Length: 27
Image 1 (cartoon, helix red, strand yellow):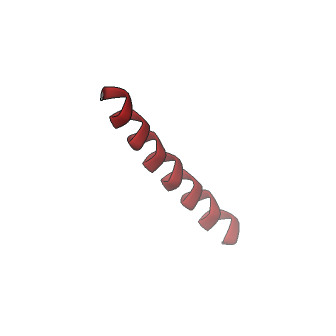
Image 2: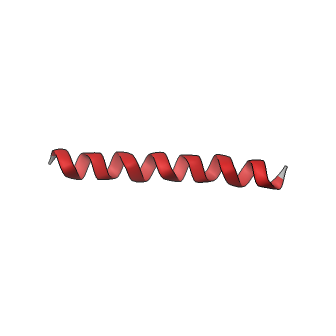
């Protein structure tokens, strides 16, 4: 279960980083 929590957190962080990079690229 711990691994599942970490994977979900990693996915959220990955999406957040991707969104931030996309915003920077667009700007």
